[in-house]
Image (tube, rainbow, N blue to C red; front, top):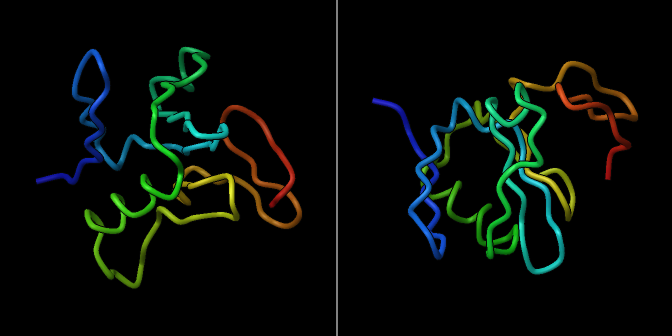
Length: 102
């Protein structure tokens, strides 16, 4: 059975399968979650009222201490799923585009 990131919003309970999580981006006191569906549709992701640290801790609880983690914290502003990183070096490259590493 798959693992999920569960986030409560004012309107609903989001249950995001970890294999569809592409990345999470910090936006001040909020975070924006991008899934495969968001990337395919060109969506702006889902804005949630949780800081990135809280989401990182929640993911750590779900994933556990597995050595081969594919979802990692990348600096202060991103959590990324390494399964979706297409290039490394000085840039992170996602299906939505590339940006400099933190």
